[in-house]
Image (cartoon, rainbow, N blue to C red):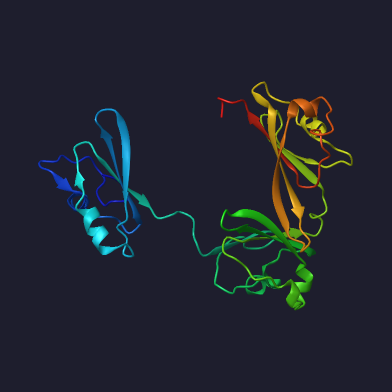
Length: 272
């Protein structure tokens, strides 16, 4: 018995037992156990490892639940109880130039003014630019929604965006926004954020980072950048880049960089 049971351990079976009986033997499932996926892992015919998942939650079909609890547990089986998801479902995050950054309770219908007021800012906050970073279902891709903090505080309803769970609201110091930068990560010698210089390209960024390490993948890197749609909302897009071509000066791959671009240099296949 493993995971979120009260007495996780290896138990000796004196006789054939059901899933219900082995759960009782382990003291039952703890309050943090996830009932929608109770998993039994076993080795079949000395050849392969297989798993079976069972839904024991209150919302599951009662007949199927009883059938699941009567499932025979065999010698050598591992019964796993996974924890409830560690990510809080009803939070927004406040970040940046504020007195008390951190997680705050999200409520349906919540707006920026329910979270932001003059009392939460550090001195010299940027009143002209702030951001909401949002994960959009169903694939939870990120977008950035800029807003004017000064207009919000003066009561402009157009600046008072409704929030969504998992939103990250970021406030800046007055001199932070406007510093144009790019970043590089992965298999380079100095993976850092660099000031974006006019005309800077991928090759320039790699050279600024000290060059590629010997195990860097040359035929593919990933460039992540933000694109603003007609509604003023930023979307994240990813572009594959051939570093061999970029370093050779190919216009197709040695592309000009934009503010907030991030280049990820990947390891060679087999080293990931």
